[in-house]
Length: 450
Image (cartoon, rainbow, N blue to C red; front, side, top):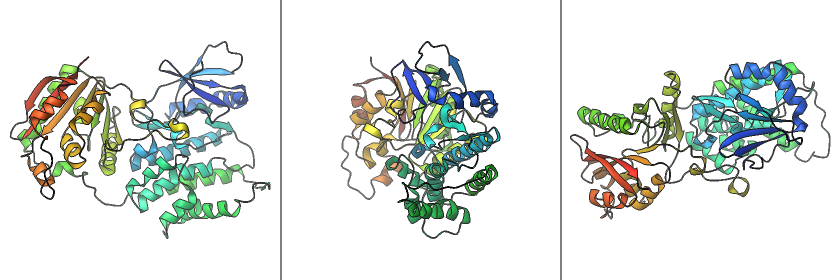
């Protein structure tokens, strides 16, 4: 097997292999002792039972150059800048709980990379089986700084400054440098953050020129446990400020009458029953009211509004909904391909899990009028993702569009239902068109032409 994942080149102990869509991990002989300790100590069993570590099967293989070949569960890969505050917080707490458990079994996380934590059934778990090493008495936690840069720094900035600052991870894919986080945080009265970010940053600066000197530090296991518990306490007490964004209360201020709102739901349910999709991508999902109509499907609910995604995620957690997964996503500025050779972290389309249907409700007027994106560009983007599309067209005499145009010149002469249908009909067959009662809006079910 030679198809090494583009993001899997930094760890000499193992590599992730993508073989015709099937995911494997090869364990090299350099990791033999640590892997055997993980599997024989009981740590693997406890973490998998608690759904904190991905399960795997050992695969028979005949390559004498590697120690083991394992096949882990397959999960859809997402990135921390696509997560809401509570999603990132839950991933941080999962990482710390894994480290605390590992110490009980004489092991430790050798890295605390935020990309190694992914979601399954809306719960975070570690997907890198080779992240563990045997605990060495007296040694500090190797991944302490990485945890602070990957998790604590962005969470602190989201808490004290702005919920959108996890976007800094797009340009700092190895974590937000602690000196930068310290400067952006300014003077805050939080002892834990002072210790783990500000003082930590100062110590980094102090020893920055000491690379050629061996610094002897003897830290007991109990001290390391205390450090992890301190971090857990710090993360648990980070909470978002009470503020609102443009769309987080959207459904309290829509121009839908109750009858119209219910009719819209009925139409979507009818479309759902026609297609019976297994996987759905809902763009502009807000808090997921319409996403949840696909309750038997795997749903990815994308929205530009971080707080709406936060509410959607918390609702899913509270109701134990395992099939809906909210993500922060800006259609006009999608997650880019970044990292080494622009291949280390891939854009959404290249990570696609082949949804059966895309849904775009009350969205096209924002794309066309607010962001000036032509119909054909919108059509081409959606059509590359899935064979079916549910899309809502909002006519110009709708009150929401009237508000949008009240303080700007209407240069959108092509924004008509006739032009919309003409452009989309080049790529899609219009299977159904149903006006929503008592509105200037219309729902379409479209099928991509072969």
